[in-house]
Length: 148
Ligand code: FES
Image: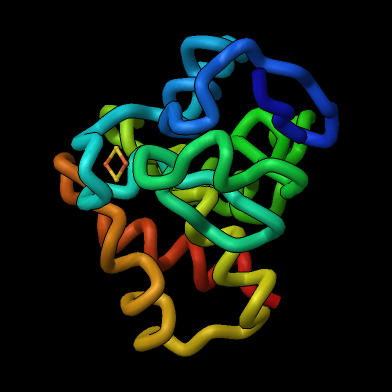
């Protein structure tokens, strides 16, 4: 049994604390917005926030986040109107969409840390989030648009 604080709500989950957080989010808590891409920390599709920082949920365990705030795409802004999501819609960023929740979570964490990132900082922060459709130019433009 482990305790998760997921999108602001504390819940007890009947899992081994060594279970990857991604598994618990998707299969135990039933939140499917966080995606399984590679499972080895290379694609960024599983990005969530842990105490506000972008983390690969396939690379950390339920035990690692006990007592910490875990936020998924569903909890970023329940109405879907986080400034990053608004910019994403405005610029029609996604193509297939699979990687987009991870991209958005990564971008949102960047803008919390650096409200006005340079293009170099945007590229560096987003470099670990892979998009098979190649939407990289629109992703950078949307991060720029969402910055204050
Ligand atoms: Fe976690 Fe690819 S699924 S980085």
